[in-house]
Image (tube, rainbow, N blue to C red):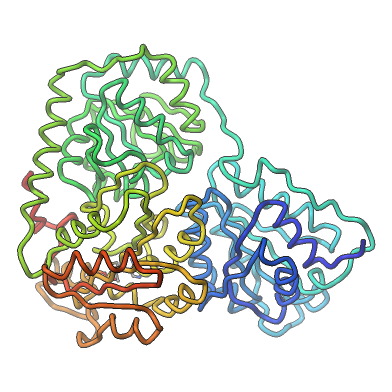
Length: 563
Ligand SMILES: Cc1ncc(C[n+]2csc(CCOP(=O)(O)OP(=O)(O)O)c2C)c(N)n1
């Protein structure tokens, strides 16, 4: 049967169980949209308000569904707009296929309208770029794109489609079947060497204060059951990075929450500092997670497991580096250990219990007006069912979320754009996550008001596609993080760290047709969160929080640092 390149592409995407593509059209892409429309409702296109937001939606989608996030942009300015989202996917290890349409092969390099060098544009931020040579080459390139996006360390693949290749008809019958193992990630799970497992077991048995430090790679590997079993088997507390948050129910007695420089719980940092063996799983051991590389002492032994050899022995002298899939590694390790190697009643587990108790007391302490972030998260946890996904951004709002929000069910239940750390990401990521959740989980976005302003128009996208999405805007009347840094480091010489403070983000949201409310009193908090979570619409709760709150950061004024 003769079919166009666009049709072949759509059928292949369907074969790979793609349900949604996020993006913005251009003339060069329209044949693809036409074909998507012909195959609705199995596949649909979600129109974003700009390409970057569409790309971030694909990131949110991928992180909850374990399917590559699909996004598209047209040649030139569209492709350039998509770049920040591709960078987030690359630095955050997010499986993505970023489609760009391009000018016709015939006009390439001749000064065609809007043309930019897409390969050069994307090169630093992708696993690879692919462009079919002709319509018959589409199956090979699409299959390869899925294989690369879902194998090894997940990341973005760029698929560039010249307009003529999308629009021309093949004279041949094209193979349009998927290689189904590449529809989701991880597509394959390399196991550790037997000798490495044995060495890890010996190090664990010899340790008296072991700790598990779980990074985002543990979630990508879907290792939540194994992390819990290992922790219980060896009697190790679990601390996480911001992207690893969700690997364990944070009410579990062995869970101490996030470590690091922002979004951390001081009790978690303390435990990491005092451990004699760290099982670092799927973490870069980067600046944020290690508080400027200060939390891990020279004497501490490290077993580092990561699918990507680039991440091991990069900063620390590690006792053992295992390059393998985390879930497979933990399964082998658990099998090699006796059923219960935990030293019951050990001083280490007693210490963990005390640290957890102290944190809980410290948390309850923060309950005065003006509204503190801790109170807001109390209300959020009360309103949100455990089966939820909290999505946040790089800002105080993100740091507060890491610190104060309690994940109560393991899995991909916390999304922070910690790849590139964009401050504006919460709303578009949440839109994508809300489309991608497989189990009717409730998705909530929490953003600072500065970050919210970047992509506020995506409220319309969320409404248009019928999402029931609660959005919390923590309004501290400033780019809070910047303002407090200016206070701490530059003698309160405030420059460009606030917008006009008479904006009302609840009213702005109402003008997009959303339900919205502004909360200024403690007595209104719980009801507002409850309404937002139960609403069938996009519901924005703007909370006016204490502008001086900066806990959960590395700043000296951190009120919890005393624990
Ligand atoms: C895209 C981007 N630009 C700039 C920054 C630097 N930055 C970090 S936090 C912050 C302030 C964000 O303000 P807001 O969203 O109101 O959140 P708050 O810190 O006040 O909670 C900025 C500008 C960033 N992380 N990302």
